[in-house]
Amino acid sequence: MLSIQHITKRYRAQPVLRGIALDVAAGEFISLLGPSGCGKTTLLRILCGIETPDTGRLSLRGQDITAWSAAQRRFGVVFQSYALFPNLTAAQNVAFGLQDTPRARQAERVAEMLALVGLGEQGHKHPAQLSGGQQQRVALARALAPRPELLLLDEPLSALDAQVRGSLQAEIRRLQQQLGITTVMVTHDQDEALSMADRVVVMHEGRIEQQGSPQQLYARPETRFVAGFVGRMNLLPARVVAAGMLEAGATRLAGDTSAFRTGSPVLLGLRPEAVVLRAAPAAAHELPANTVRARVLETQFHGPSALLRLHCDDLQATLDAQWPTGADALLPEWLHGDLWLSLPPPALHVLPLPESVRRAA
Image (tube, rainbow, N blue to C red):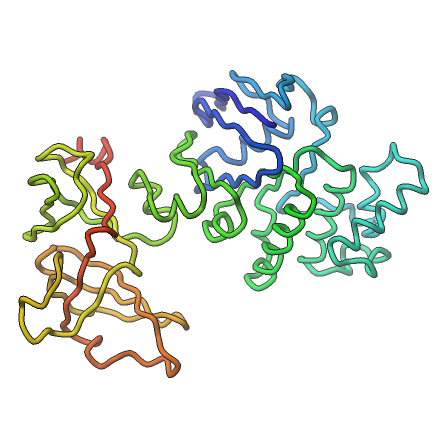
């Protein structure tokens, strides 16, 4: 439906977008995820017509819209700041984009949209009389009222508290699926992106670093940046010493090295929930592959789980491990001192070492 073809943008001498190419299917929910300054908001502003790309092309259903104004595109846009008119009621705000619609149909559409976002009884109130979450629902209803072909969301929930944000994430996703509207959302919140989007596009320094389903990005990050930005990941420097064998610190570890030559410096990535913690075994031969000694440095309680900070002399590294807490939320006594930890070979991500790090080394 939407094709973004090699878009570049710079401000003075500073490149902000470096050849962004992305296709969006009809009805798809895409999340542009990345830290501040990565170019995701600039890309969204180009999509809605506020900014003009230096080079590249935008097409909608095969038609070039690069030179179209925001008014010509008629996309629905929801901003972080709500951008509601304070002197208008919720109903009047929703009706603002329906000025070309007959008055009787306007009232019908406004009532339909307010009911859709759960504010059917709040249309008479002004923005100051509504909570932050309700104001954002009005902004969403206003964006959807003209039946846009594309919905653009710019950090729509970042100004809300955690509980309201969680409920609105589910609400926006439900509405998007119910209406089948193609949606592009900008966010720096990885949980938001993973829980809402069909496809997550991770941006870094003006480029697309990796894209895929939330499950693909979490399970198979392809670069150090994605591994460190999407979820929590232990990253250990290592070297490939033979086929299927790596060396981290003073320890040999089994892992998939098929993409690397012997002698290559790499990074080993492992999610905290994949680290297996063990009490001291009766005999050393009972230990599985990739098992080393460690000691607990710190424990953080997170309700259904605890995060343990561990140091391993053999790996010459400090790692995080996640342990599920039971009904009493207490940890076994052996988790408070020296123990064994295993790094299961199938859960190890062998990642290329970034060029900048190799040069520094």
